[in-house]
Image (cartoon, rainbow, N blue to C red):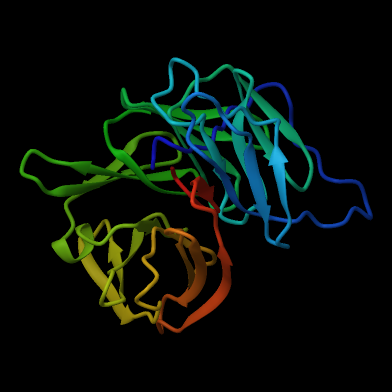
Length: 291
């Protein structure tokens, strides 16, 4: 699935501008979907939070020869207000509140937007990873690392890296693109992806499938600092996890045709459903997707 959909983020000449006074607030995007490209490619379709759907012809659907994917990448930020995609051969970021940023011809195979849409990660199978400011199009840093993108928050990036000993390392890249630390967490953490990097830059949240144990892990001390049970219904397998505030975590299930979103208090585990909707049986990129 990861190769089927992605979100591109390439920023160059254009800078996003705020909407004029009196403009109605944008209708956030829940989901972008489309069938895999075989002989032909159907356009991307956007499903809005209001329930409205529309064809998104501006975003290219067919991947070019440099992309190992079923469709050209497209991504949606967790708040549903920023899209990253390819317009012809150019990586483009569209802010629904106003503004389109052209990042130029930057081919990436995998794309990830930060939860608030302020940053975009573009990565390649070769191990090249680049972070862009989506408001200005400026590239903030670039690194070469074979790790997989696990979470992005405030210019920091959390990678997962499988070692020769068959263990999982968590790698923290700081705001300058430097490796801040490499940690081998206990199995209770490593075996329970997805991971969510906190705004503090050192705490990682993980939610265990089945048991619903929400664990907070400190990358610097190597300790689980807090553990509580969250009550996400068992039928929903969480694929995306991110911090919405300093205390609240959002969990998103984008499996099959039943999509759901839950808000979890990181201290108490109190879980509240905030959204649920039907999705088509196609390849998709939902809010917060890193695919």
